[in-house]
Length: 420
Image 1: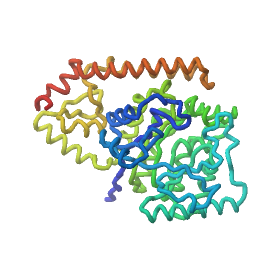
Image 2 (image 1 turned 45 degrees about the vertical axis):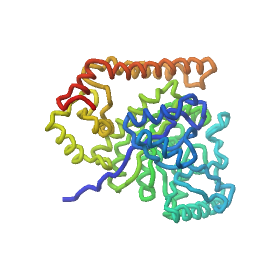
Image 3 (image 1 turned 60 degrees about the horizontal axis):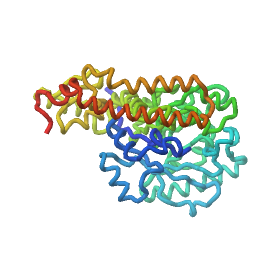
Image 4 (image 1 turned 180 degrees about the vertical axis):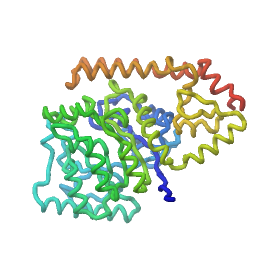
């Protein structure tokens, strides 16, 4: 009998669900602590850094440790197209080439991205990248090359050529959404992410799980929109909310023995796409598909043994809205939250706890039907107002959940005794 390799992964998230880097006005008023607290409550194990994270190592460690979170990776905006490898050497984990990038230029259409126009340019760039990758590897850090929209290496053909010209010292950050967006022209190419992953899975050392909305990508391509226009109009979303099928991607990673992080990422406007609701949906979708492959440190056997021990004390109370049984012992709440359960979602509370999500879905549907044009200043003001209402509803729902009789019965009157 063949034993399948263990799927040794952890699920993390990028803070752009709460506040963006491109452009920073999307979610700019959201504090870092809100993102970290909500991400931890949902069950994410770690965060990639964003523009609001401390840059000093000790301060960064302290901020993350308050919520029991890990640092997933580091991002470095490189300029090897313009500079030598010696000038570029620094502490790198995730590398993105930004020389000539049009990502932050709203008036520049997607087709105007920079390109290498000769074999000599490709070979020179690959050589400098190899030099940088060898340096970081000598310091114990594998360079993971990102292939974003609007850059020199964008399409699957670009990635193929770069991987062919570089050594295995250069790892690949596989980004499902950018793979799909980069391959799509007049029509959306749904098969592109799985095909790209299959060709270069031996080089993959980091994974971004991001979904796309096919109709917005097609519109951006066909109407010569900019990358920022596509982002603002909702081109990206969390896994399970778009057009990409993640099951074959997860299966490829498992079969190849990938070990590392699966990072949920989705540049969106929090006024239109409520951060907590979508971050939670992305986590549940990805966790459900990865769980059968055994998450690192939380395999089925460990969960079964853990729950069996408390079941002897009648401490596990099944909760239909939380996914798996919710263990109410204080020392196990965090572990079960990471297994899909959410604190406060108990029997008979669906209407109260899902009210905010319903409002968010209705508003998002209206926004998508109304227009795909960039929002006017008036729409921005309306978005800010709606965001404030949604956050107030979130706080109210959370407070109500902790006080409602059903939640109290689920989390405080279990037969193992009250919380200490």
